[in-house]
Image (tube, rainbow, N blue to C red; front, side):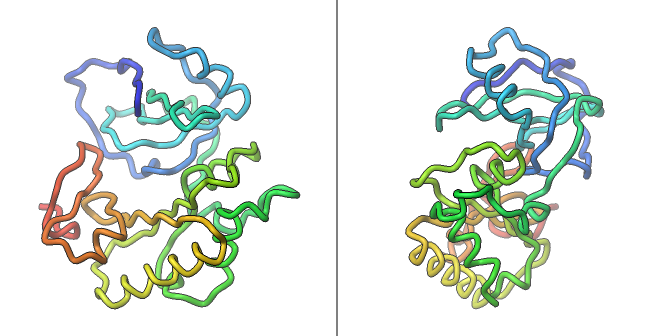
Length: 225
């Protein structure tokens, strides 16, 4: 997040892991308290679409780290939600079978998603769904995608997969991207955190993992101890 609200809790408050909220889940919010450093677009964005996305940051009991997105790419505001202010939650998997509104399905990112849903491919081996602008529009019903938007995906990878399967998966995503005229970026959710599929396929000795306690390089994202 480019700007983040000050936490509404003590700096030394114990952090907890709450399985109800996972990174990239979309939250329909009843309210988000104003922050002193909030930029002018945040209230307008929430009136337009009262949704926030769960971000990777630790929070104490009763709170979840979330982000508000505006209409421009650089309009991102990190904040904190109290659980009582959350009305509904949509995971990427929940959004997979939702259809875009009339006249929007031909946008490249939606076209790529349709190709991946309909094709028998290695994706059937995983739980997965759209994130980013695609997921936000499907959840909120508010036009968010543009003709130049990428398709962002989250793919659950709780157990180690064979390198050949991951390469096959990358090939399928690349083929769908080429047919739709867009890019498809996939983040694999491992026990250690989120890892780009491209890094796993590249066979690097260490990969960048994005976790709630910050990013770090690890040799094995399936080992958490």
